Image (tube, rainbow, N blue to C red):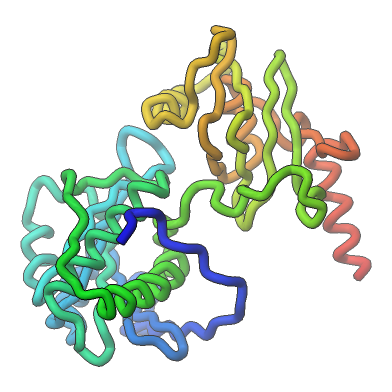
Length: 310
């Protein structure tokens, strides 16, 4: 089985069942899709004892430990594991000084208790590969080879389980499997999406971006300034340095610029503009609509106005 990122789910309605175990959003929450074979349970680290006491934690399953990366604001650290009894592993990690980073934990088990140790190892391997390929979080796990100890029919079953996990995790606040810019792969000439493309050309840059789902994605091939300006804050410098370290921003023959070797997703147009420009800049003003030349901010106002009229 390939270690390629998990396939994108088709756009269709899904029913999601959330249960606040103690009635509080800060306590243990369980989640499952309407007709599903798996259940997820998530808790903050302070509520971890309550999660460990849950019946789900006594089953075979997989788990993720997630917390903020102190070296790069906005990025998360993730550890992925599996166990015959997940609660045993969670308790051990809670006492492990090397796992002090995590602030939330999520476990995923089968509702009908038919996951085996081999299933857990396969799911762990695939999720690690997906997180590594997505580039949205930093894995704490060491290098692990793909697990190939399942027959073909069971691999097919586990891939369906992965499809469900890919839907559940973002809803619970763990959007770490989806590749950055995954929805931005369509060509700029695609008529259906043309209205969401923007350009940034300040200071000789040549960047293209588009809205994709809840993100603003700078497309591969875009050119960013190599030299940062005085307004470039420490957080922005670290983000640019990390993009270079990850091979997303690479040097080009013209030493004044860096090229996006892959699409990169940002929370806002200004966040994307800051990386391209090498300093703080108003993305609403300087990203221009690829067809009309409108600023992104004016384009948004026009779009919202049309929706209000509808």
